[in-house]
Structure formats: C-alpha cells, structure tokens
Amino acid sequence: MTKSTIAWVVASIAFAAALIFSARWYMTGTFTLATPPVAQVPESAAALSPPASPKIEYPIESAQAEPAPPTQATLDTSDLAMREALASLFAGKLPAFVQPMNLIRNIVATIDNLPRSKAAPRLWPVQPTLGALSTINAGDNLVIAPNNSVRYAPFVALVHAVDSKQLVAIYVRFYPLFQQAYRELGYPDGYFNDRLVAVIDHLLATPDVKPPIALVQPKVLYQYADSELEALSAGQKAMLRVGPDNAAVLKAELREIRYRVAGPVVAREPTGPSGWGM
Image 1 (cartoon, one colour):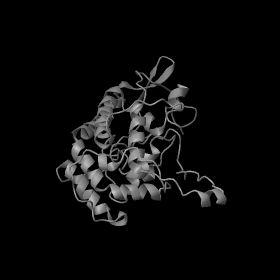
Image 2 (cartoon, rainbow, N blue to C red):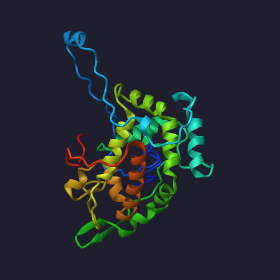
Image 3 (cartoon, rainbow, N blue to C red):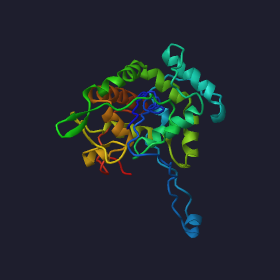
Image 4 (cartoon, helix red, strand yellow):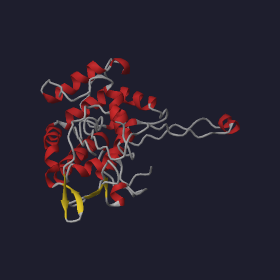
C-alpha cells in the first residue's frame, strides 16, 4: 500500500469486470495463483457414473446485449481485436495505461483474483499508476487522509463515462475466448460468466466504512488497524481505499453491468469473514 493505485473499477469487471479494477495496494506482498484442488474419484465410481455436467447459473446467452457475430480471432491472436473493441469505448483511442498484450487472459486472471487475499500485479490488464497512499495522524492514530480519494477521481470518472451496454456487448462477442482462458487458468469445468457475477457480488458486498480508517505499520507496509477490515479480500480493500463517494459510483456501475450480464442482484448470505467462502 506504499504505492497505491486504481486504474478503473469497470471496464476490468465486465471483463475485469476488467478494466474496472486494478489497484496497487502493496499491503500484503506477492500472490501465487493457486490451482483449485481436483477431487479424487475412485475408479469404480467413475466407471459407473458419467461425469455430471457443471451447473451454469448465468448463461451468457441470457445477457442483455445486441446480437453480434462472434469474433473470428483465437485466444492467442485476440489482442489486436480486443484493443480495437476496447478503443471503441473511448472514441477510438485506447487509454495509454491499458496493457496491450494478453488482454483476455489477464482480464480473466484479475477478475478471478479480486476476491482473494492477495493479487498478482503482473496479471493486471492495466499498468499501475505510481503514487503513495496519503496518510495523516489523528490523535494517536495513523489514518487514511481525507484527500487520498482525490487521486482516484479521474479513474472513477472514466469508469462512469463508459457505456455499459456497449461494454457488455463486447464481452458477449468475445465470450468464448474468456471462457477458454478461464478453463486454462485451472477450471476445466468452470463457467466464467458465473465467476464474473460472483466477483461483482463480492465487490458490491464491500462494507461501507465511514472515514477516518485507522492504519498500523508493523513493518514497512501498512495494514488496517481493524482486524475485520484487514481480513477483507484484495478487491474489497481496494474498494475501501478509493473512499466512500468513489466507491458509491463504482458500485452503481457494477450493478448496471451485473444486470446486463445476469439480471438483478440477489442478496447472499456471507460465508466467511469477508463475505466470501475462500
């Protein structure tokens, strides 16, 4: 968190839910992408029972998007087509901070990592913006400075300006490649749109915390003084750092995107300390 950043929280979520969210927080070090464990099935049981088809909760065919022919690009050759598609969201010019290579794979990995405790900057679909977290002393406490949220305002304004209908249309057009990248990530039976919706719901469940937010600095890096906040995921911590006003704008954009890819938000019971079962 000594070099804190946010470069969107919405063209990374319909694809990083992708270009919504890349934040450099440096609160807890590096992240190693884990491969989900594979259940061992006895040979006799496997021979008797055919593998069950994974349940799809939010089929991409139900997304609210204008019909368009799917891309003819392959996952390995998709960067140019994706850059051109994303540039159409910004009057034909792709923002300079977008990483031009491995866009779909990095978007998928970033979305998948947001609900985890740590995230890998090398997988972000955007370049982090350098800058230090702004802090002040409030009595005996070190807290996030009120003006810290100002540094995120340009990115939030950019996210707010994106046409969510057009964004989701691009996502749907390229969806087979998102699905392929998700399976390559280590989820052979997974369905990426289900994961995307779950991650959006997770970010929407970020608690609303009134400032000031107290910090501690046990070593070099900052941590939240409140143990419950420190236990939040990397994505939810980033949502807190942008400040309540910016977070409200981002949540509104996420709700709009979620509606377009899956329908209205449905309340879920929390399954862990951060409302996420992992």
